[in-house]
Image 1 (cartoon, rainbow, N blue to C red):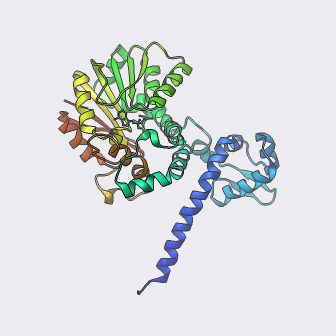
Image 2 (image 1 turned 180 degrees about the vertical axis):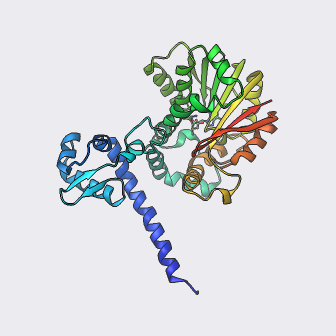
Image 3 (image 1 turned 120 degrees about the horizontal axis):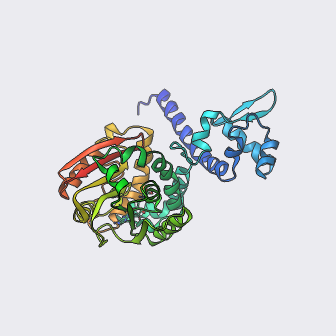
Length: 352
Ligand SMILES: C[S@@+](CC[C@H](N)C(=O)[O-])C[C@H]1O[C@@H](n2cnc3c(N)ncnc32)[C@H](O)[C@@H]1O
């Protein structure tokens, strides 16, 4: 073998960076869950003892954690005063749960992949699927917390406004379905913004529906929101003006069947809102950190989820607009267009 040792070294460096990030992901989660980031946000320079006092934690652990944060560039260190500072620009990413770039919950999703590693390896060997419900529960709350800020920031202020004539209908009062609604984050955001409309969230995972009901009740919603356990091809409700699939169509075994069912449940001039992970139409358009993350989630969660169901089409989380439009067209939606996008999502509108 004629190996370029400089390239070996450079690649080893790249992998060390990845492994350091993997170890540090646990530190980031701990910083979030113990309130260390929130305590540092806007506090200016603090010593490790001050941070420990502010958060009811022990200084020696906090000091070691802070040094990991400095090594990763999340926090800065002032050697003269031996104090640590979180730059203001890091607050939306690490310490503000409502910010659209609050990314920490992705680490709960990552932890579920680690905890399910053996089961995931097994489906590689068997070719079988793995249902959503068979994952570690960190996946369910992690996805909810990861997606909710994006829904709060964009769903009613941008995505629905980008659909043809839909916002006016929602303000007047229509029926809306949120299929594969999970813990109901998107349904709740819409129900709060459009009190004259009625929202029906469906999901095949009973535990998620239970939590969605609890979240709606905690939000003080009870009149215009309903959650039911139902598969995407099974709900009987009709007469919808809008049917949403929020980051879930690619998880379904039969996305064509699910979209066809939606078509039958929609009023004549109804709309499908399809929110999917941002992706180009092939691997060469997807060589970036966001796609790398999505391909990993897709391998471990989305693809096995689809294979566990009837048909098992296994679109994957990086299907891209072209493939998604083909699925919608096969289901009878002849007009699909990209309504808008964010760095993390593509938002498609489908009409008959
Ligand atoms: C990635 S989660 C997204 C949840 C939610 N839409 C959100 O954005 O927070 C995918 C959801 O799709 C649901 N799901 C998967 N296949 C389904 C099917 N065939 N029918 C109904 N729900 C399904 C899962 O139970 C899970 O809650």
